[in-house]
Amino acid sequence: MKTVIAGAIGECVHVAGVINFLRLAEQAGLRTVFLGPAVSPEDLIEAAVKENADLVGVSYRLTPETGERLLGEFAEAADELRQAGVRFTFGGTPPVAERARAMGFFDAVFDGSEPAETVLAYLRGQKPGAATEADYSQSAVDRIRWKRPFPLLRHHYGQPTMEATLAGIREIAEAKALDVISLGIDQDAQEYFFHPERQNPRRKGAGGVPVRSAADYRALYEASRAGNYPLLRSYSGTDDFLELAEMYQETINIAWCAIPIFWFNRMDGRGPWGLEDSIRKHQEVMAWYGERGIPVELNEPHHWGMRDASDVTFVVSAYLSSYNAKAFGVGDYVAQMMFNSPPGTSDAMDLAKMLACLKITEPLEDDGFAIWRQTRTGLLSYPLQDDAARAHLAASIYLQMAVKPHIVHIVGHTEAHHAATAEDVIAASRMARQAIQNALAGQPDMTKDPAIQARIGTLVSEAEVTLDAIRNLAEDSVDDPLADPGTLTKAVTTGILDAPHLRNNPFAKGQTRTRILDGACLAIDSAGEPISESERIFGLFEEEA
Image: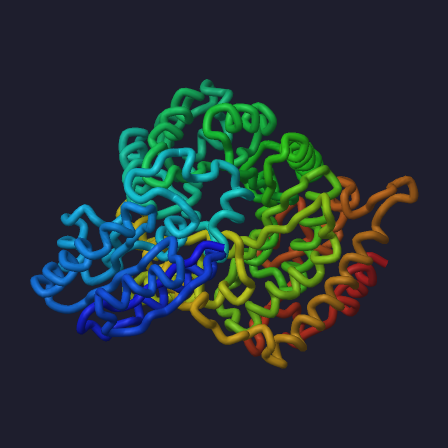
């Protein structure tokens, strides 16, 4: 095991940065020795020899002029060790770091502006300075493993023109703001990419970047080949799914697929397919990506949550998502957990709902099926005021860290006002990083709250009732009801899966009523009183009888 020693040199007694550096070194699997404050250059060199150090961390946070003289003397005395292969790194305030950098003695210099994962990457062996694509994994799962304990950061980005989007992607990549850029493409590209005759020039750029060719996607990918070489992914579209999938793999090396079960069709007005046909098409997409070892995300639960569905329906859809991914050959499944949906849910009940999603799906995991946790802030939950929105972003992500996400999908603080610019994305990334670092430094275990634990139990048991009701809809000839398009369609048309926003929808029952009570979103009866799933489902079939 390699050894790292570190301390504050000379008369400097500020060691918080030293402690953080050594904590990251431990996470990198290194043996650490803390030398403390006000260490003389002679004692620091002696300790490096005694401990057979591979890396020596030096810190100084006082007057730049004094620090420059002290570091110069230290560098002269320690040069023999450096020639023997010992590496030296410096950490201090920006003015002192600037002078330390100019000396050319230190292998790396940190001034406190660097994200913690940058320091961790250095400690794991990444060379300081300009990185290459080889320094950053281009596989989502490998990158998750490499970056632990920090989650991958993802953000949606797309401007109304190709030129602006290309420039913005380059800026985001060079800032090392994100690990994953989710391309926001315009509506015509989602619906009619392979049918230019159906595209409406007046809609060009509506909702994102107007990509119109494979060459456009290649250009977006090339723009990302800088900084920390972020992964790219894009919408799975609403038609021509497999053709789009093939193009995404060839042009942007898509990080993972995201597709729903029940949505992006005529039921929500976002695609040409009916409900049952679209379910079948979506399952084909899962299988296509699964065969190629590309992760799949089913962005299903939050579509119900954003339509004010009950917490139980949210949990049921989370299980159906994991179940269908596994049934259709997906090996790495990205479990999307959108907090704050619907708005008004309390933090405690929101966390309980997500933990219930994890608990009910956990038995599906095995050697061939891994679940990777991805959290995000609710799309509809942001306040309009900028300061309040920034506070909401940080608070939401801090709460999300309680489920130990592998990926944090940052929803920018500008969401309620405008589509995020590159500058907005970079700012949101900084806020998210700070919230994440605060949590990783020692977040209280909120999952142990008795009220949260009780709610998890209730949600899981209620969700099992709903899942059994869906199974009972299947024809006798159906072997696997929860993966059968006909049965899943019946779950919606009969109202077993339902949401208030589906009222008057030709594909859904739309009769369920919900209400936020004590921070939870509950199904209610005509009198406004909470009802159990058994009561709600019994009422559906009693009406038919």
